Length: 352
Ligand code: FDA
Image (cartoon, rainbow, N blue to C red; front, top):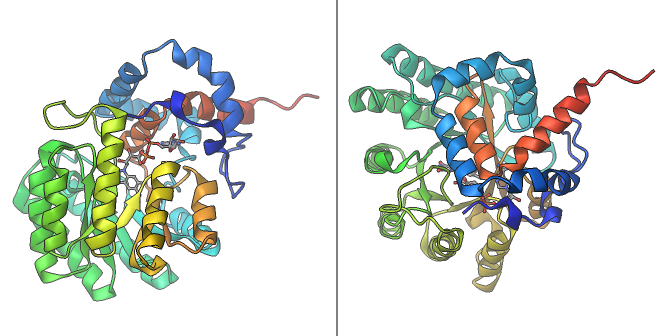
């Protein structure tokens, strides 16, 4: 599904914005890193990265290594809220909208889940004070779903209440397929009290067509993405072409009948198709938005925005970046070589 060998090298040229690492050119990276990475089976490598993303021990080691932290800056806006606000302000000045992810997932104590909800509340307040987009993306495993669904619900409720008071939007991210029902149930419950709550649907899941139809009927806002988790074939499409076909179909349904859908991803072909559907059907740029990840295809983000489309960047911040970062590597394993090389170059002592 995520074969970097299929990546047109030109599709990865950096936007020339304000990279936090000395990015030479993603295109040159792809060429020179190619032969080494091709020795490994793409799918096996992706599965290993996704499995490593769940290993807390590895995360603890990685977060202490200065080298890895420097690599992470490519995809994470900062370790602190002020750093994230600064990054968002830069994006705003480039004509881009934002949604904030306070990093953290799969918490294992009620205190950690409550603290995560508090961090979201503080983030919402800071966004309002700074005059930035009041829009956050929340993971239920961070709110305590794996500990106790009632605790999770209470935490989300507190975030949503703060969002409602500030006129903010809360998107509930979608995690692996074992959480889909619980996530949809909770979103529906929250949406009944505050309409500014939406959800994510993964095109990779076989059930998603039915979920999209139901959510359209319930007027709940959907972000469509391909799906970032390693799912079994019994519940998910495994071939890239199948996922893309599902994405294209769901995208069309959402654009034609959904409530302000978010078309999330970096697949230029599919995003162009969305723009074509919108133009052909007279769907104005304020009736849906494109969403892309911080640090990924900045060229495309800025191009779509300058063509007049609404583009929102998903901005993660915080110290618990390990699983998020590993998923980004898994989406495009050539990133490993790319970020490593740019960091090593930065650390090389200057020649005298
Ligand atoms: P695809 O993987 O086919 O990549 C298309 C092209 O994009 C690649 O060829 C490459 O050029 C570029 N690209 C993609 N990923 C890259 C990366 N990491 N680094 C560099 N280049 C890359 N998933 C999920 O399961 N639950 C969720 O809640 C969310 N939420 C979410 C929000 C937003 C705003 C986005 C953009 C994505 C998500 N995702 C997600 C992740 C999503 O499911 C998917 O894993 C990624 O978007 C990668 O898929 P693409 O659509 O980019 O296509």
